[in-house]
Length: 432
Image 1 (spheres, rainbow, N blue to C red):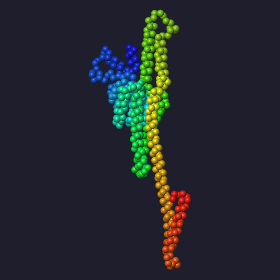
Image 2 (image 1 turned 90 degrees about the vertical axis):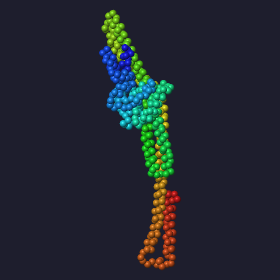
Image 3 (image 1 turned 120 degrees about the vertical axis):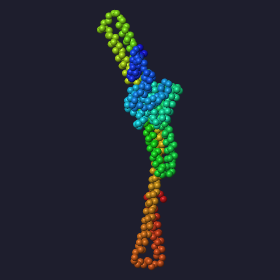
Image 4 (image 1 turned 180 degrees about the vertical axis):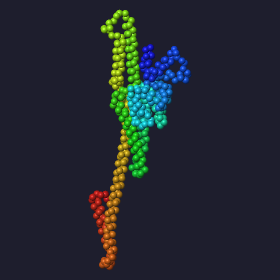
């Protein structure tokens, strides 16, 4: 009887209702159910496990998930409705929106009372103490398959005492860090040759390719920075890390319920023993058994509430902190590579700007020389204008006067041009 009562306490409300229905159906007035209806019964789950058959019968908003069992490592495809997850895992709707493929949300790791919600790049999953639910997407089928295979391999070859939720979280972090690092490596392999080519040949095509490359770099840096910030935020908050000890919380909750059952049994035995006594008992000196039992249950409830409020002080978060620190170093190294690439792009842009400024200065110098030469040629225009007047000049009758005029004008123009060059050199307008 005590065992059945304990099982009823551990089951979720929906599971208790299903169990009560099954118990009433097995009574003396029970009619044999048809085989089709009887095949779906008996799929109840304890703790935070999900009644897969019951969920499949529910309609509306169901999504495809891959369920990985913590005990056996077996994987199966299930369809779970969003309201069913909210009821069974006590998750708010905003947490499940992070996993909705219709929306684009940044990476997030949320520790809740009975589950850990992970949205790390292409891996979107809900981790509990008993199972992991991985959301299946058309664009991320390969990533989901690799995650499930790696999680199964870790569960089969488990060599340490890490709880299941930490193993699943570690696989998700490893998949996200590896994916981001591979994208950073591909971006580096594309960027450095393109930037070197741009320094030797500045063209519109190369500038457009560099612009697209920089856009990819900014987007990837933002994603890597978000994952790094999430890990750093978890490491800085001991309460959030304590919330992620799901297996230990489940064990302590079961122990607390077992103690409550023991207190209940002691109260029943004590009430029966006091009822069998024949000596009269004063109602003033000795309280009734029901009042003492109520005090015992109130003490158990207060102890359970104090256990929930002191999670961060009871758990040794060093194990999770070391796990997060290892992947923080990995993602920080990826971020440093992207930062170095951004600095290289900035240096290349500065070099190109210097080259363009140099070309612009050369054009200005050439324009200045052309302006000076135009001024010298204008001297010839003045002389030709004077000699082109329609009046008699005695100089026209002098032999070789035209040749002397050209020679003197050319010498004067050369002297004027040299004077301008000396002035430009003295004022350092351009090196000569």
